[in-house]
Amino acid sequence: MPAVASTAPPVLIASVAAQTRTIRVGSGGVMLPNHMPFVVAEQFAILEALHPGRIDLGIGRAPGTDQATAAALRGVSPYLTVEQFPDHLRTVLALLGDDRIDPGPAARLRATPVAESHPEVWMLGSSTYGAQVAAALGLPFCYAYHFAMGSDVDTALQLYRAGFQPSPRFPEPYPMVSASVIAAGTTAEAQFLAGPSRVMVQSLRTGGRLGPIVAPENATDLDPSLPGTQYAGTAEEVVAGLDALVERTGARELMLAGTVYDPATRQDTLARIAKAWGL
Image (tube, rainbow, N blue to C red; front, side):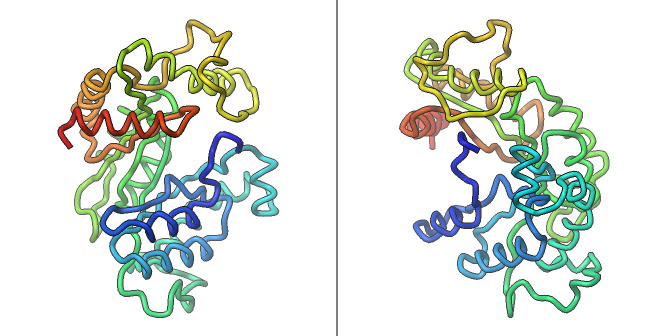
């Protein structure tokens, strides 16, 4: 996927975790239909053994990218693996120490020889399906609000809270919301830097194939009616929007993302937001 660098989350997690000491490092996420459940459990159990208490395994149901890529990764129809998702998710949870779940045929398998701790498993989603799965299994849930700010985050989180079944790790619902952000010195500059993300959204909504992220000056011929998919503005404006999002959704955590051409823009955005929040 030309616009996404994190095609192998466990590899990048290992690199980041090895160069840090206290922050949690996780996937956002591993698209489970693309991978064998035992392999996912094995990879993240080893990451947890290397960096105890710092590894999050975010799991998604969508095959990701397109059908051709999904078929190449698993060698079978992506529709078949999506249908198997609930069973595969339960297998991963069982292998990672969830005693509530019968591991079935995987009962004799161990993801690592002697697991002293287990990664924290999150359910990711941009629909009500993921919210309901997370609720039924008592998992923390992250709603992918960064895809489009017009998406139905409110209904998804209402279903998540209403159907939540307490688990040993999470006696109460624990929602996260992702948000796409760009902060700059002025609102006009931030809107200019947000152009590449609008190109991506327009391509998706018109059936185009995603290409590399374009430079802001090349983000032209945009549909003026296309809704924005980012909190783009000064740091104060972005923080005000994020604070309102938290109050509206009751999110316990935020995941900040940003589709930008230059990684330095993302770094500057995060620094500005951190300062505005007094971090």
